[in-house]
Length: 240
Image (cartoon, rainbow, N blue to C red; front, side, top):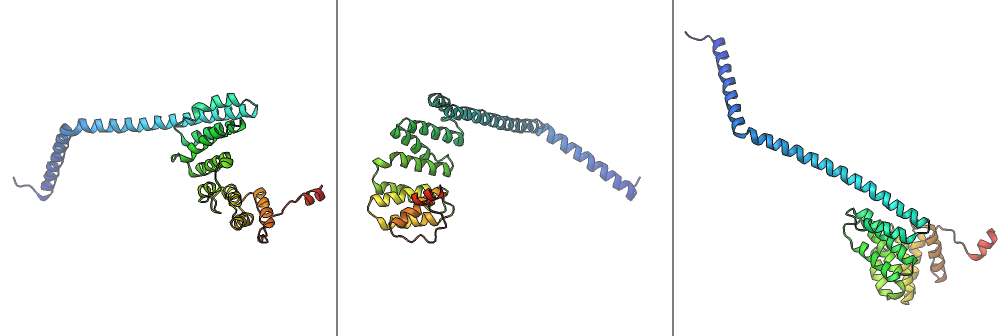
């Protein structure tokens, strides 16, 4: 019996559906187990990532508490206890906590007049490329302060000149050291220029700007552009 167009369409759809079921069954028989394995592996990997993320957050919280405990001990005049608490954090895999702990260790050494050991701690932070650049810049400045009396002026200048620029957050501290090194090397003109620049840079802390303006003025450098109130012994006495 001949099929009508409607029956023919229904028959073709039935054949097409059956063919799709056969293809799906064949695919599942061939690859179904591997599909399940892949899904399970993906879920396991995602679960592992969530667990790792949780552990990282948990570890950061613990280290933050340990660091705060060390600071509290320092505040209570217990540097040795603080140093002991800082030791494991100074070996942390988290660069920020590690740098903070190492910098505090160096400060404790400075308080004990162990400048050479402190400078070595600061130098290690400054050389650690996993640490954020502002930490490294600060460590380099602190290292230079600890070593200043043992360094030639040119070493100080070459070390800090790259960060003794207005765009750097530590321009004030680095620039002041560079200016002093210029003075120590007999280059008063360059020292005066640096002091003048420090005095006229509004992002520099007020106390550094005041000192810079005083130093520049004593060398005959024009500091009229510096919008800073210079406190002299005479003006301080008048204010009292």
